[in-house]
Image 1: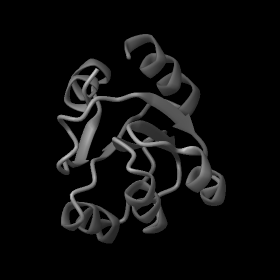
Image 2 (image 1 turned 45 degrees about the vertical axis):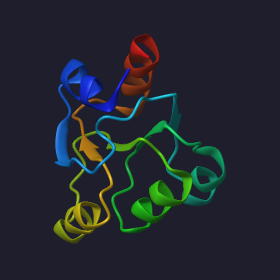
Image 3 (image 1 turned 60 degrees about the vertical axis):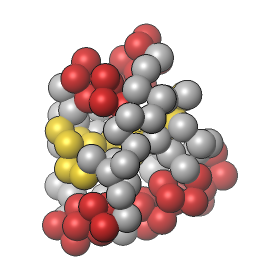
Image 4 (image 1 turned 180 degrees about the vertical axis):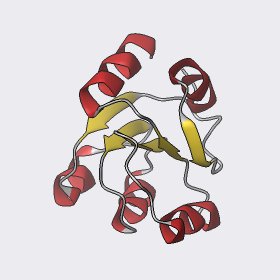
Length: 109
């Protein structure tokens, strides 16, 4: 499944479309500990987190995640959204929790 399809299926809010919305999702990683995400997220993973600081963008770029999905309707600071747009990182948000999102992603990819 491509990121743009996942956006539609799950009703995700697009904060930054990035250049990756046409990329296929190969897996899912859930985690908020940034050092663990750095070693656990693999290329093409959808990363589901409640973290909203600038560091999530660096990790997304480093790991080549297909997208970052911020769960639980967490507030994402405007500077993070703007930086995601500058770096062409696909940053999404959902009102669903991490577990529910991962189950839905797993059922759709």
